[in-house]
Image 1 (spheres, rainbow, N blue to C red):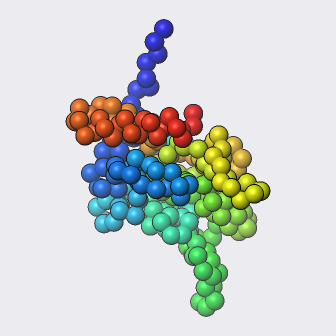
Image 2 (cartoon, helix red, strand yellow; image 1 turned 90 degrees about the horizontal axis):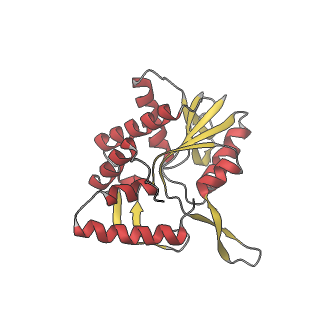
Image 3 (tube, rainbow, N blue to C red; image 1 turned 60 degrees about the horizontal axis):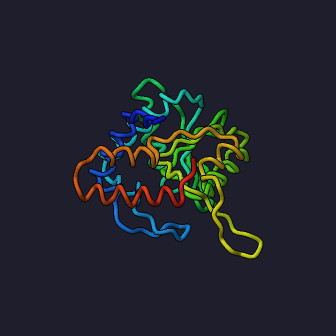
Length: 232
């Protein structure tokens, strides 16, 4: 018996194409934080002008609203999450969902309003906006800040779910792969819903639809990487 592959997600497919056109998603050989050699790299810092950031916010807003996740405000972790949270808040307001937002500083301010939090007071159910999730470290830091302010970390929205095994440091200091991703850890262990604009599987589906020989070579490398480090 043969099983058909899932139908492509139109939003994810448009986003992958946009990320490629913007030079944010690239192919080659890139060393990850875990020390792996990845055949692709996603750098959200290259959404670096108003037009690209505006389009990115549209994708976030569309995915967030389609997910049905309920939230009362938005939080952007320093540093990449700050412009993302602001842009998404603007786009959601444009679509009739006006939500307060806040972000944090890496260093506490000892004058003016002081502290590490900037923007609206953290209250209610908080949606955290970030680009990708590698080890879940930023998520844990954000959760601690939000809970410390008396609010509830409720969900996360990210641009790309790499769908690959996270790593952890053992008692002897060695780093090992674990059979779950950072996204799965945040969902299962930290109790947050996570919605991603696109996943690695969406990138593979995009590559499968392309006929160019260079693209086929990228596809084979990405498939091999998924087979080696991927999670279900």
